[in-house]
Length: 242
Image (tube, rainbow, N blue to C red; front, side, top):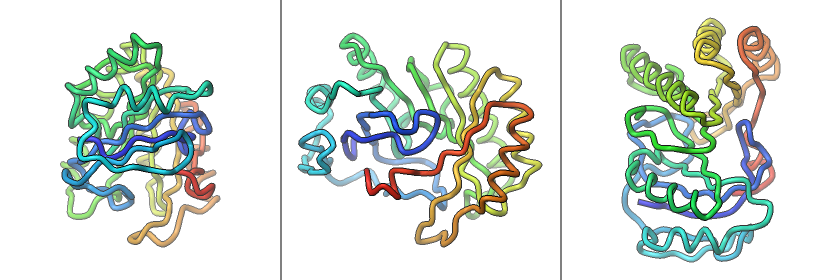
């Protein structure tokens, strides 16, 4: 269920630079071409032994020890505990249990999700919802993308109305449609005061180049007519952090 637990700065999104404890869950029903996480249910779990050390030990299962592990990694500068993945809401019932325990212990919780399971949401202090674009997938038709997009908007709206500090994040390519980004910004503005984080794609084995500065500025200018917008590249990668 859990792939790894570690402490680091948030490398992307609205809370970039804040200290988090990341609980990364296995598996995701989507297969985005830029994803840099393995999508497999098996294998051991690795746990950072000392906060920020990048030194890990591997375990067969840590499900019952997770709260104790988080307590051990806690530092005075901790902003929140992030449930990330993969897609953490694959394990929504278990995350709800963890969230309640952490809340009683004084922690803030943060959900990082692709937004495809609005019906599985629990209570979180903060949330980042990835809005996928058609170019994020191979061999998926427009009906698939539109159905997913409606669920993402529903997820954001439910979180927003529940009082969660939620923002949207979009990984953008050089070929990303300006018209589609504008449509998304308009839809977000109808929900409420939602910050939109534009994230230039990071190069991977499949993607050799990132998004140009010109393209980023054009997309931000378009979005700025409707929502609060910011550019948040993955700074943890060029800083050599987890």
